[in-house]
Length: 468
Image (tube, rainbow, N blue to C red):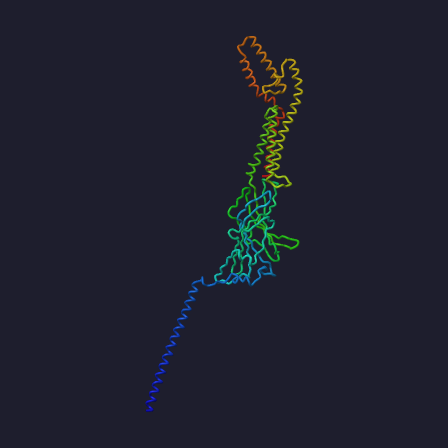
């Protein structure tokens, strides 16, 4: 009985142990499977996040460039050698050149190159980062200004025209689009046959040579132009780059860069507007030498018209030029041309005066001739209604006497009419018109017809030979 109860007890204990061991092993397998599935799910989520970059929050540029870790109010390498800043200029256009204001307006791209190790950042691909105007005020940039500038502005359409490019090693490219109106000291002594030399000067405003060194990045090739720049009145002969130092008594020496360009003026516009009209007025004044010296209204009005026209031309040229204290080349030509026109008026005044003096002497001779031949003053006048020289008057007087004798003979012989005598008179006048005009010219008019053109041609040869 005791053995039977012990056997039952051991059997029950053995069954209980086996069932517990089986349950424990099953629970372990289930937990292992669950942990494995959780790890697998986490790996899949990480892979999905890696593939979908929009759900990854990138670093801010301030953290990437360490902007908040440095004081960018101080130049790079403060306390050490000066910062080298290379300059490169792309000239877009020369908008205008004003002789009156003595300035020019230019639009160009100004590019700065320097290295700031504070902006270096790690990069596996070694690619640079490009930013717009929003980062410019948060980092250090060179303080370039334009010497002798009158007006300047940075283009802001559609946004401010800034470009900032940073390399992983800290090299920086800063580009800006600017329009500048600057002064150009022009010399108008040879205007409009002149050549002007203008320059735009760049300099750091705050940093002297001990802190900042400006230089042309590519030498003379640092100046580039947008194709062919054309101007209405000028031809651009050359662009060149140069550099130097500028001294200020209160602050010291500064590096300065120069953008030099040479302008040669087109002459054709001024030939049509100024020189050719002046030549025409001078030649028009010579017409008075061929007009009868007794035609006072014609010669006086012609002389006054040419003088006033020359004054108008001179006034128009002076209005478009600055008030300089020296003589310009165009002033020489216009004033000499005006002198020729004025002398033509003076020439007729001399001719008229000498003619009047001769008339006083001839008037006494006419009285004697009128007493001898008993003719009126009306019969002593020529065909044009004006008195002439003594020889012409004698010819006209003899012509009148012969015509009167012919008319008396015609009446005594009983000619049918006086038409034949009038026809003969017209033929006689027609044959003598050329001789009467030539004989009626004064010697001064004769010499002026040759002397004035020769002297004016010599002046033109000397003028164009000196200034061209």
